[in-house]
Amino acid sequence: MPSYTAPTKDMQFILHDVLKVSDAPTPGYADLDRDFTAAILEEAGKIASEVLAPLNPVGDTEGCRLENGVVYTPTGFKAAFAQMQAGGWPGIDMPEDFGGQGMPYVLGTAVGEFFSAANQAFTMYQGLTHGAASTILAHGTEEQKATYLHKMVACDWTGTMNLTEPHCGTDLGLMRTKAEPQADGSYKVTGQKIFISAGEHDLAENIIHLVLAKIPGGPEGIKGVSLFIVPKFLVNEDGSLGPRNGVSCGKIEEKMGIHGNATCVMNYDGATGYLLGEEHKGMRAMFTMMNEARIGVGMQGVAQAEIAFQNALAYSRDRLQGRDITGPKNPDGPADPLIVHPDIRRNLMEQKSFVEAARAFLLWGSTLIDAAHRDGDRDADGLISLMTPVIKGFLTDKGFDMTVQAQQVYGGHGYIEEWGMSQYTRDARIAMIYEGANGVQALDLVGRKLALDGGKHVLAFFDMVKGFCKTAGETEEMGEFVEPLKRASKDLQTAGMYFMQEGMKDPNAALSGSYDFMHLFGHVCLGLMWARMAEASLAALAAGTKDPEFHQTKLATARFYMARQLPMTATHLARIQSGAEPVMALDAANF
Image (cartoon, rainbow, N blue to C red):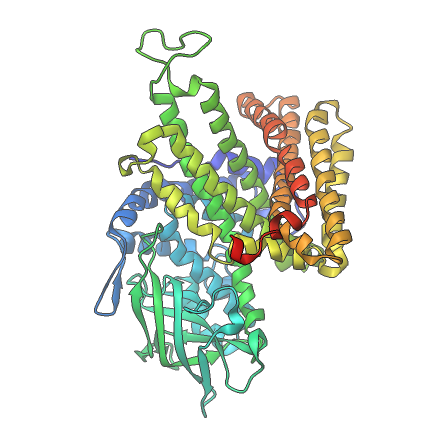
């Protein structure tokens, strides 16, 4: 049976040796000393490995079931959910005014990775609630906040987001769900939404749906979309639950993965809803939840890669197959362990070098969110807006790839259900699709984010990389990490210039290269993270660390990424510079 151990040591290294969070000026970060974060991470890791991980195969095997309009979650989920609530984990980074613990978002991200790795389907119930609560916090009236947030922060009530309809996914301007105004200021919401994660379940006494719908007479297309709070049970003035609202689950989707999470078709039959934010500004409000969710989905890609890697590594050490070509390493046994073979080492190093840099990238991005939200840093806000499609798209693409590579270590055993490896691949696959398919993320990056504020934020990123390389390059030992990063960054800048020069003449030239650009950008970000981690490990070794093996391992892994992974930027650049012609050459009828 697969197992999971939370990577607390690596998380601490990134938080304190690389990001130096307790020295940062962001409000609340001074409290994040090593002892404090260690206590939080150790406890979260214990819950992840002892409570959530054992339920992961249960959820995958049992799934959810719909009976007489009620969705029942897998065995053990309710007790585990109650345990998470009792520990205050759902509200770890939510405001204290509404019952949260008020900790920084970066700590919530660190804890969230543990929970998601241990049981992604389970963790989605509270993760979606967090996003819905954040949206109400950002756009709701004081009355709406008072009505919903305390219960949602505690996960007594959970939350969802309702966007997709049977005939429209990404193109939300085509939606048909209507919201008819009522005399009392409420609306009657009618329509059908599909693919609604955690749309119905038995874990909480109420579910607060955030639903996109059109008010009749409004503007056409996406400009006419508004956002509504539609509770499963109406809420009385005293906060108690009233009658059942006109919303129901029509079916549970049969899916490739995340079986433990109820993905529902939701029917709204004149359900009472309340406008959240302004009329016809629904996408502005919903993007609060979607942007948070995209960071969370990027985290899911890393989390599934981490647990898959842990199990593949353990298997490679135990499984005896063949002999080391340089001579037996297990002479008393019938064969050597898999891990002695170079191709297995390559496979494992690709997984390890991705996961550790991706974790650093996620945590760095989370510090930008904290700087933006806690300190009003507009530059940080612009930079994380630029990075969001890279975090979501690149990390989920590569995270899925890493779960496949982990399966490969097992050979045939990776393909059968007995060993549990297929679940990580199946669960990771959805992360490339929901919250905006990765092709859409790439289009968002090239079509919107590069030009944001006149290109200010991508130029700031280039300056940041250049400044790091200049400072770090003054240390001779950093040369082997700085020089590859410089080359990769130059490839990224060259690709950006190509879009500027060719995109105006032929927009398809930019759009045809957008996916490669997202991956090129992702590799540069992970290269930057490895260079920063290498710098931190060199400093620790120079200072006489008590754990030299950890830091020497970091340096070896950084060298691998720089030598074997970062050169992919040149390939992506060449594909981008090939333009639109190879992509668009065929007429649609000739495919």
